[in-house]
Image (tube, rainbow, N blue to C red; front, side):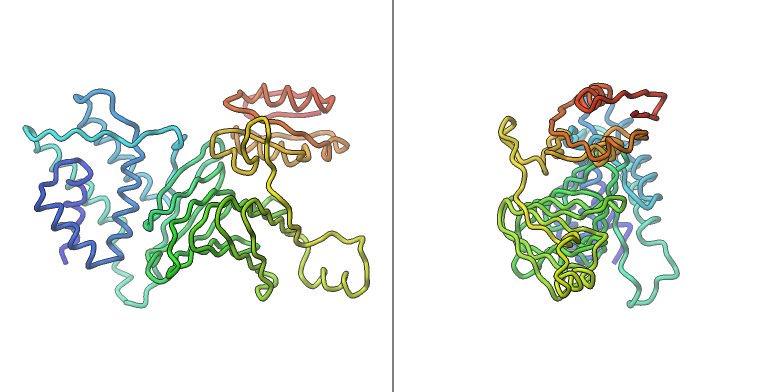
Length: 366
């Protein structure tokens, strides 16, 4: 198998310059090699997220800029996208009269992809660990990505999604740090499993939200459509099943052993490890609070100020310090859509009788 030929064909397809014969050749190769197909899908998703071109004459220049971005992203452990939710797929306009620069760019893409995916002389064993694919978002940005099986994932700010090249072979497994909304393609033969630090969520086809930030005291799963099965890392034998509009909240600081001790001693003063709730429906917005961030709405439903400020930090990529311990548990409900940071701070402080000060990217609330 000539790997350079594969990536050259893929590059021609992305640039809109592949002939019918070349497309057929590429399709046949990808069907024969599922591992290569997964990588090509990841690269295609990356290419489709570049901004739409405004002028045909800028085609070659924009293609080269994308090449540089692709090179930078593949050389780093994570793929960073800024405000992907607002971007449209690039419009590729074939230019049959001048194919030379496309061939040069295609060859460059082939070289870039080969250098990062295949040039590893230390991985000659068939038992080598599968290569990891990682998509992440910075604080202040969100991302949408399509996985090789067609599943769509929206990543909230400061989040990371990982999956290896065996994804969609027997199982569909991903690892999540942060928050994501999943719209999973139905496949009963290949369950979809999300691994977080505290729980595993298993589905066959459904839509739901998972929130698992390492600095937060709880891990949450809110089901919108379908059904999910949840098992806890601390007690994998215990299963929880959610129906639409159900929400599971896990207290990360309580263990199964501690819960058992409370039950045995009859001590009801301790906190519950797992709480089953219903999703929060915002009647004014006619939407579910837990997933409004996907629509670029910062929403809270009776949340403590301490948690709200932590989310605001990630949302606006700032550092917020609360110098008032008595205000940590003050609760707040509200929705902010496309509002500047100062509007959010004004509303929070006004309702809580607090004040704030902004210096650069640092905010003090007192």
